[in-house]
Length: 159
Image 1: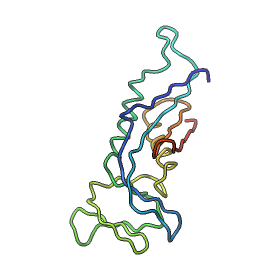
Image 2 (image 1 turned 90 degrees about the vertical axis):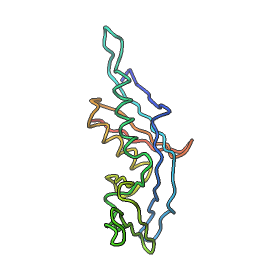
Image 3 (image 1 turned 30 degrees about the horizontal axis):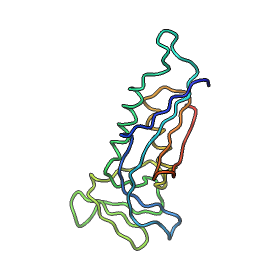
Image 4 (image 1 turned 45 degrees about the horizontal axis):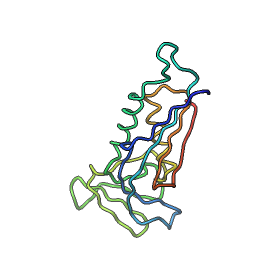
């Protein structure tokens, strides 16, 4: 593909808390990241009249919307078999999350569930890609999620 569009804007970010689960009995402590997102779109051609491959604003709006959903949230994996997630019996509008002997209690509206088994840079890159694929019509694009500067995971798939 002769053209590629790269977008890594300052506002393609979200700040969230999570913990990665390594096994049935081992997980990180709850902590947070200021995640940064980048998107690369592979394109066949440009419009002959405008010499534009795509309107940047369409892509920027879609990326920003996905980031906004996860910003300032506790990220939890929807499919984890290692977590027990339930409504808190002690507090209204709160959710309890159990891993081994740890019990967390969060306001329910501060949780964002990711359709994944675990919260990792890889699962976040895949999730964001899946969300963008719903609104963007590109045949091939990748999403990179930076956990910190110099540490990232990418997901690419032809749609």
